[in-house]
Amino acid sequence: MEIKVVKDILGANDQIARKNRQLFDRHKVFVVNVMASPGAGKTSVIMETIKRLKGKTRVGVVEGDISSSLDAEAISKEDVPVVQINTGGECHLDASMTATALGDLPLNDIDLLLIENVGNLVCPAEFSLGEDLRILIASTPEGDDKPFKYPLMFHEADVVLINKIDLLPYLKFDVDAFSKTIRGINRKVKIFPVSCTTGEGIGEWVSWLLGRMGGG
Amino acid sequence: MHELAITQSMLDLVLKQAEEAKAGKVGKINLVLGEMTGVVGRCVQFYFDFLSKGTPAEGAELNFTEIPTTARCQSCGKEFELGEFDWTCPHCQSNNIEITGGKELFVESIEVD
Image (cartoon, rainbow over all chains, first blue to last red; front, side, top):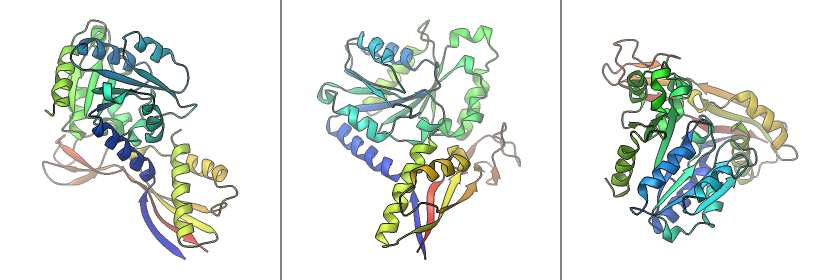
């Protein structure tokens, strides 16, 4: 006997993500899922974002890594609440891992929650966490052909930060061609060229983020 | 690597459907995989053989329908398959396109006894 199913395989994850979203909404927390390859600068972008937001909004961080708590330790120096999730081998965060971490965060004292996903350009795109915004950090040394190799990630991102633009003089990375490629499949995407080393572009990104949190 | 989590979710979904139908055994699972998801059928099969042991789905045949990444040109309206390193419309060379296929990841049907 054949049974028609036609159900999304990740429907169970999406259901938990919706519950996370309800919890975030109840506590008025704006949630950003930060995705990128290993080494693209996720932790650096988070640190720079926190520094610029001091006194403007209350930030919390969830750090997702396969193992270690190095990133969480670095971020805790910024004096913000941070929870580490070690996925123990899984290459991405999912909604249920996120839900577990939320119990350890003072959600009433947080306006903006930055969730650093596991460094990977494939799997995190599939798993919703209940976030408001998906940002993808693409760094210039990775090359400007990455959208072609990881189309889903670039298609799903609300924001792309092109990081390490201070290295552009030494690399064959065409920012205009790269931006045009992404906009071709993702017309709504916002693109910010930034450098965490020189601080260039970070102000624009943070101002835009604050505007978006305010409902802009 | 995400195939482990995806296969577990797929198996949970299949077992629930089989239980609701009061089926004793799952013989075949028809899956639809979009190219953009990067889900590799061979890996799903590998994890499935391991995860399904001792369940009513053990030994079930997995049948994969793979969907290529397709787009519709917003300028001329034609549909086409996305090239590997070329995301412009092959008919009018516009780069204003909308993805129409390739994100699928679902269980189409199951065959049970």
